[in-house]
Length: 566
Image (cartoon, rainbow, N blue to C red; front, side):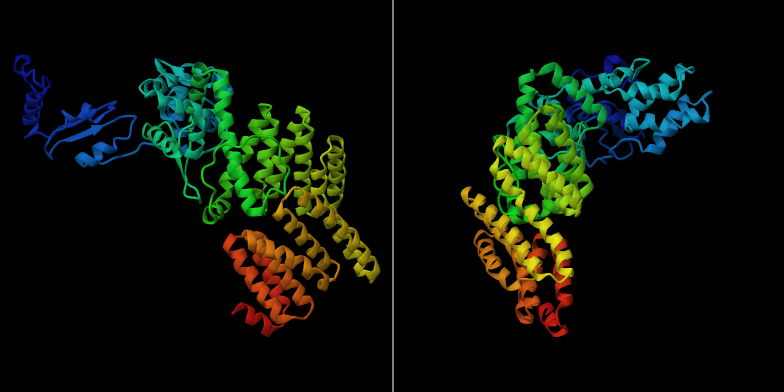
């Protein structure tokens, strides 16, 4: 009001009267009012003009949604600078006297600042005042994470101080959530992980995390296929949060928070694995206690998780690497085993192999024979999918030796399907030579392998495991041309699938029964089973199964195929 010509003695003491006078002065004027660093509605309330001729720009780190709702303000989110604009800013400030080759390093510098305007301005200023420095030198300094925030300071500007301003104003529980989220080396995360870190419900965790989003301390990545919002840190903010958690929390507190998150993740992975594969029989299991994962996911949620497994797969790989680096070897291999479904269902064998080999090396460094056995078996599974038979034989031998040394008979039993599959592959050459008697001998050998597996899983009370072994018996019969012998095994397995509601097992049995009928020239039966299999594969989103059904239908007579497709 003094700037508008009001003498000091005429400015009222009462805030209400002062507001009224201020607005009356603006009635006939067109004024632009800039309110910087606003943190609450109350700070700006008294300075709003009350007329439509003037404009108020409110700037703050927080998202002023309440102001937009109450006053009809337009909310403009100023996000990170795009790569092109960031590069242009740095070049404009720091380009003087620099060679073209040096300026090519600007993109790397901008990537380390990740589009944060303050960090970019500081980096450019440092280069401007040190013309004898190359851009590459500053890139090398910032590349060292422990000192990155130390290096981002120039001329009174400091990235860490800007973060401090927001952090110090947080309530205690919000600050705890912010710093603990930095404990997990994952590209992004959901609210469920935050709940485990703080031992609060997922709903309460989401409320806190959304407050961090409002403070521009976390970024929303998107919504995954299961409907969960996913969040991530800006890299510099994560470094700052990591500093705070190291400074403010004891080692035991940090370890306990991380382990709660990991165990919760493991519980969800276990449930997804059981629903997909029909029980625990397909993988080894250690002694890690599971965390609270909430209610068991229903079929629609599990299907959505599979559909969005690219996100989860990336996170799983990061977690396994972090666990291995921290020496939490048993957690690492159990999580990798349980989440194999994310890799197998999308046939991303390169990623699956990379994560498994990383975990296997960690198990060897840690001297964990149980973990080494589990990861060798997992690597064997990858190579089986790729039909790399020589590699599978080597891994089979290694798995048997390790399991024998630690007395793990169940682990040995799990390798029997791989032995059987190798024998089936070898059978193809024998059959091509017309030696039916050899084919029967191969079947007997393979059948013995599966019978031993049935005995093992029966001893552990795993009904679904037994059903999968029976499925393998039926598949082996079909592979050696004994379709008539396959039906009893498959029908037993199918009964378990129907009893337990295991759609993957149900679809697989119907596919193989359809193949049996087709081989026995029972077209109507083949059409029925294949139609049921196709619907089941569609329901659970297994594209490879749908393709196998299509191949079988193509081998039927035209009339039977049309009936099955109707």
